[in-house]
Image 1 (cartoon, rainbow, N blue to C red):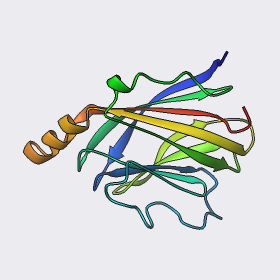
Image 2: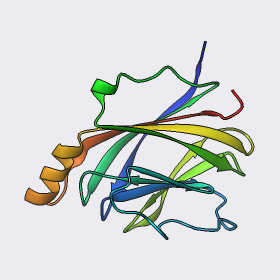
Image 3: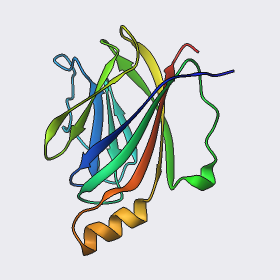
Length: 155
């Protein structure tokens, strides 16, 4: 049975509908964030990088990151507006959070003590509320919520 190894709560600054999760040791990445960001694609993966397309233009999203020892149980799809899975390669075992407008955030997500191959599932709720806030008031905080679950690809 899958066991939760660690959990972390953070906020992601969303700008131009996007934010990213990128290998912390990003000097050798072929396509660093935000190059080639695709508007309208909920989860887009590049080597060492995950792009997340938000429902709102500019706001602060609440993000819960979980690291599991094997594939976690499936989330009830009725709780989420969007869900997607992708592969993720990390050379350092750490992931940085990136904003379109502000660049790299101080938050670092620890996957493991060293690099490896991972799978990730991203689930999101509150997309239409974030979009409405962006259109009416400009920004919101924590309206759009993400659950990002990592587990070893070999599990």
